[in-house]
Length: 84
Image (cartoon, rainbow, N blue to C red):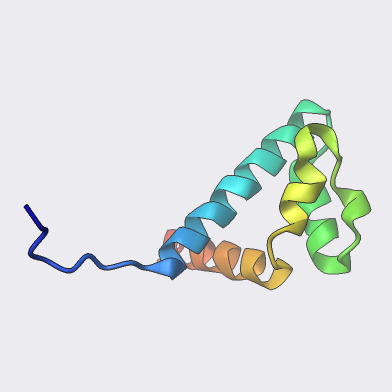
């Protein structure tokens, strides 16, 4: 039986969830290696130098697949949401 309703597809939500997932994985990888994940990720976001991110568990290649501006946008939205 065919579906009678049109399904909505929100690419923005999928993109945001993917970015959150990658950030969480990178954060956990850095923490496992004994780094301060916050400092390392901030260093990467400010400088663009992937050397701030360990290659452990492919964290460096994962974070480089996401636009840095998108990461900052999501972090700012989360901050705003949590500080209302």
